[in-house]
Amino acid sequence: MFFVRSASEKDVEAIREILVETWHATYDAFYGEAKVNELIAAWHRPATIRASIGKRDGEFLVADDGRQLGGMGYAVMSDTMTKTALLRQLYVRPAFQGQGIGRDIFAELETCFPDAEIMRLEVEPRNVRAISFYSRLGFVEVDRTKHCGAEGSGIEAVIMEKPLL
Image 1 (spheres, rainbow, N blue to C red):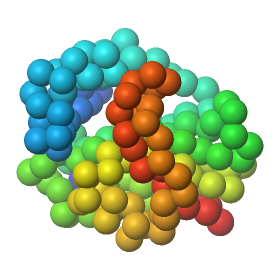
Image 2 (cartoon, rainbow, N blue to C red):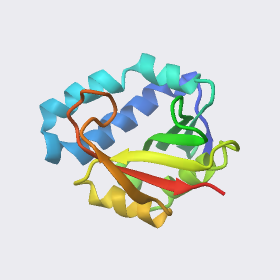
Image 3 (cartoon, rainbow, N blue to C red):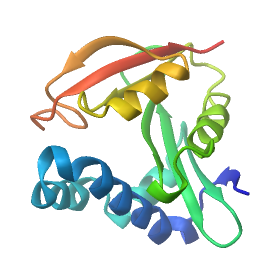
């Protein structure tokens, strides 16, 4: 049984392991192993994870069963969009997908931003499993971008939003 809690400094390596495992399981088929390794190295360094855990106006959560982390989620208030929280990461280890861990992490994240009226995310257009998951949570497609994650990335994404009550 996994419980959702705030991430801490001691979780950095386990979070990175989740990111490496889920990114390869999800994105190797789309981009190839070498490109996924390059993206992991650029976007999921321990220092980046540490900075996200400590970010003001952000919330970094993990699903923990007392022995291991089964998933992680990170959201932060937007610096440029009014009353908008950005879901930056929500990943569940492949072995634990379909057990409600992602839903539980998201349910907690959406309560962490009392000033937000919208939760927004970007998802790879070919990642139909993730798009279906987010649709079940109440997200709808509002736009598309060719620069997921960072300006100039050249990575396409569907932009989805959900109103927060």
